[in-house]
Length: 359
Ligand SMILES: Nc1ncnc2c1ncn2[C@@H]1O[C@H](COP(=O)(O)OP(=O)(O)O)[C@@H](O)[C@H]1O
Ligand SMILES: N[C@@H](CCOP(=O)(O)O)C(=O)O
Image (cartoon, rainbow, N blue to C red; front, side, top):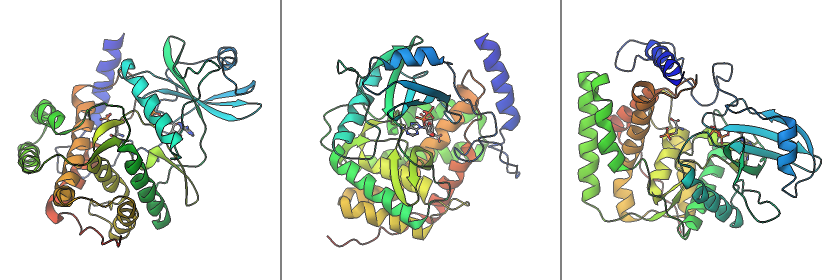
């Protein structure tokens, strides 16, 4: 059954993919924000009202009123739950190493305790956060306010930069440990898996870049470390107007180079359609971040390389989904080409200068 679903998925992906072709094509990929009418999965494991009502009895959150599957989940099954006292989110974990879930709980709770706008997990009456429902690990969260910003304005970029800087200052002292699963070591190993699907020019591009990252990082000592969100795209934030209501989806959270997190954010939040950096969003977001956490000399030197490395990280992870390891369910894949475009723009133009911030 799974084999049939995977074959169908691969055929569908192959019919969509044109990554290595120089022709223009209409984008039928998920940009993570705007194509909710397509084949995004809502919920992989359905739950009944009665199941959720019984589950809620373990917690001090009020009585069950209603349940709604969330349409734009991509990896887990997410539900909005209303009780007579509050709005909640219930997540069933469909993927990943379940042994890693305590790390995510500890990270979210730590950041919540330090007043970052994240959904700290709700613990039951006995103090337990991680439960099981319908055979899947389950967590309950407060529902945070707001919507994902598709085209973030300057005030939203400022809010995000300020909060990420605050998060990194706090997360330096987070005691947990989960090595970054998408770091340079991962790139070095995994890029070989997609080379045969790429044009000769793209193969050279990818190989040369990985070699370049290796020599650039070898020339420096360890960069400032801490806990990272690891995937802080616009669709993992919620805004009410210009107010950042929440940062969600910490399931790429890990510990490692703080600069890696910042570069992911700049590539998603401050890139123009042609992949070049948007000076206004770049300067605003970075000024707010740097006011919280100035970069070290090594970080400043490695900044253009880190922007390229995190662009390649997504080009590669998206290619892997398309060609090597498609999900068993009928998900619209993220567009790998977007990050090839960003990568080539960073190679052509470098990074813009880092803004000067007075201490
Ligand atoms: N705590 C929360 N508050 C408000 N909305 C949430 C919360 N957690 C998740 N959501 C909503 O559910 C969607 C899917 O959640 P997410 O954790 O990103 O799942 P997935 O990992 O499956 O993509 C989000 O895009 C958001 O709209
Ligand atoms: N948000 C990412 C997907 C998460 O990264 P992965 O390496 O865990 O697949 C994207 O936009 O591609």
